[in-house]
Length: 210
Image 1: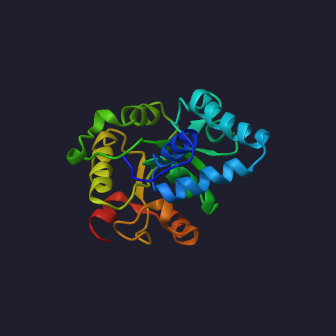
Image 2 (image 1 turned 30 degrees about the vertical axis):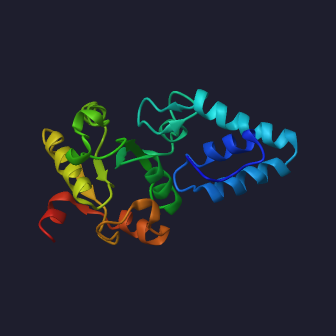
């Protein structure tokens, strides 16, 4: 409940809905709502329609689990991408971060999270088996583990390395530690992230501190 008084129940409801978004307080929500009220009707309806269509029509790529407008995303469907390399990331924001570096030209695999027992997230809650299936299908020479350098990220890296152990011809690499421990990829500048991709190291070397 709030002690704020609004001249309109419709205004109050709109503010409350905006305030449900992450990082949006009620003052910011009010500012956004009043901004929409100043726009012409067509613009607001277009804004509303885009959100409704996003929620109702967006798909997830059946290959890599990235957000897509079609069953197979543009990256997976692009014949110019290097299909022998798969970059494993935690979420869709990480895909955008890596793409923005311009340094990576392979495919992706979005896990949808990382293993975190404290949060009740186990291997079965992530897209891990589909990653193993992609590798087992053949044609993959390298899997880049581009997870955030946290305890949960390292735990997930270790789990993946165990699951892919039956495929010794597949090279397992991790980002060079130009990305500081504890940092999120989406907040890492593009130059640093790009260098971390280019200078990636073997997973075994990274574990041994080499």
